[in-house]
Length: 318
Ligand SMILES: Nc1ncnc2c1ncn2[C@@H]1O[C@H](COP(=O)(O)OP(=O)(O)OP(=O)(O)O)[C@@H](O)[C@H]1O
Ligand SMILES: [Mg+2]
Image 1 (cartoon, rainbow, N blue to C red):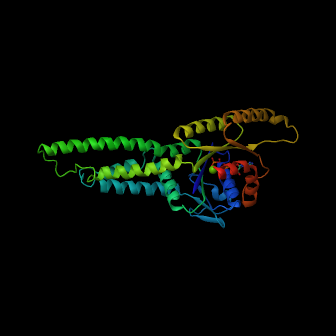
Image 2 (cartoon, protein in one colour):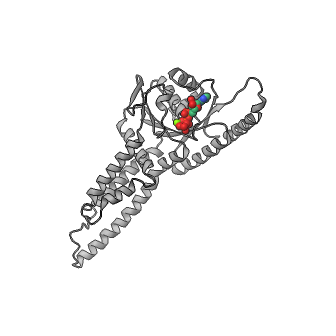
Image 3 (cartoon, rainbow, N blue to C red):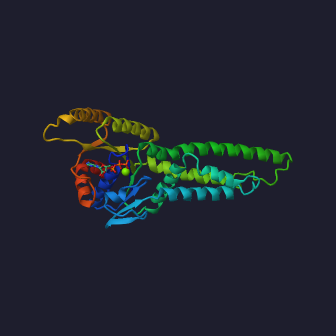
């Protein structure tokens, strides 16, 4: 099973590209699931379907799924509460519920919850040939995909700290101190076991994200701000070791006759197109014109898919 992730500034066409890629790969005979991880969904809209938060069949071998992010956050907090209550049940002096209330407003909870859903979708859909993730705008997307890498470093440090605590306990016990039956060995310690489980989960994700079977596609419009954002995203993904296979330059204006009001816009577009070719010279770059109608529904998405064929070829080959 291979994974494709669309990344780019708000409104440039990430959802349309995810849908177009899905349709193109489906036409080549693959089994496809397109998943929206954006809290503000419009994947179902792009297929002219009703939003249900359940896997919905578009055609034989082609399904879409919008993740209910509010539900995912609730589920994540419930799981954390349960884990804290079982792992720290010996510490009855701590009022754990109080910490859980604080946690529900903590920064990063939404990113964690979305990453959990990303993992769940991967685990539950191994039968698919491709899972295409339609992401939120760049900032949140990068925070989501960075999370397992940051978390992995934290967990490695926390494991070292826990090891040191267990060593001290063992020393105290060996000199005859009463440590109240607290565990001294790593295998008996519930905290260490939990840290190890969490680390394994993070390693599953970092491994998946950096594997050859996962590719990002940058989506941008030929304008300065989307280009700057795409450059930053490219750099960040490279630092994390996540491959970027291509770049969709969407909403390119091609006019048959001059429109004076659009002169400076067209100049900016030409400059951006040159800059895109320079910055992303090792990527497959495809251009999609600004279409007369919003590309929605299977037929329009097939038209959209025609423009991105070279990118589809490279994804299939990679
Ligand atoms: N090539 C195109 N020509 C004309 N309209 C387009 C084109 N590509 C996308 N659109 C339209 O632009 C709007 C934004 O597209 P889309 O929802 O795919 O962007 P997005 O990057 O996913 O946005 P968001 O960041 O809000 O999720 C939609 O109305 C879509 O139909
Ligand atoms: Mg979108």
